[in-house]
Length: 353
Ligand SMILES: Cc1ncc(COP(=O)(O)O)c(C=O)c1O
Image (cartoon, rainbow, N blue to C red; front, side):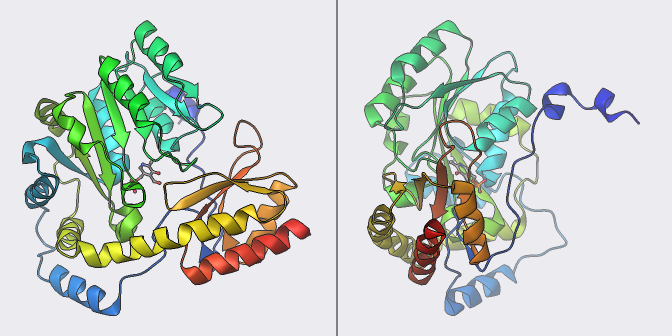
């Protein structure tokens, strides 16, 4: 078989999503919640999960969960789709839109916007962020006016830079776009800032949320909120049983016990400034302000060497390639207090070598 003849060129031309799979004791590379569930909460969750039949298909479209999130957000259930992680929801949007429309994204941003766009046959227009990692509104509006962009992805806060873009800029973009503007609030629980109230004003606004950053990454639970007419169309693209029964049930459990889950998130936010200050005090390291559960920092001397020496110390963070705006940068996810201390100690040692 000649794979090059069978697989489409856009896919062959791509690199697969890069994840360093080396195993380290301290894992601070993927913006996960570092805390496992408390014994007691974990016991209650698994007791609850036991009650669901595994011989039956899941409820198609996660109806109970949609109701639950609708109540929580104060919106209609016809404004919600639940996905197998927000990754699936990103792909669903792209699958529903004609490939003739390009996708506009700032750069740098979350890698899956571009990968899934290319896989679904869309051209991608990348507009570099400004020196403060904020949006260049004029350039974005110009590109929207000139082209056929039907979709804009804005990560709010932005991964990997960590900051929230200026709200007014985002509102201008939503207001002036003829297409859909996705505000991806994957890190909402760390920023506390949301565009949900603007759904009443803008019918082209779509909001993404996920439970991956607040303790349930393994279960892949994403939420898309948008205008009912768009949700109606997206449901035709959604696979019937996209979210498995146990994930649906666990998300239900999450909402019922949200305070207990979010106590961990609050702990992470409480330790954020301290890690930032410590990073800033290391010679050659410059951290960038963050509204997320991770910090981007530049390392001006021997970045790749420092990254490897951290791995030798059993600490895995995220490194970026050697070209582009992030060429001097690495990203660390905030861990437990103990993990943060060990990371900082290892980094101090690694930059001195
Ligand atoms: C901005 C952003 N959106 C979405 C995701 C993926 O979320 P999920 O785990 O729900 O697919 C991530 C994961 O890192 C992210 O950074």
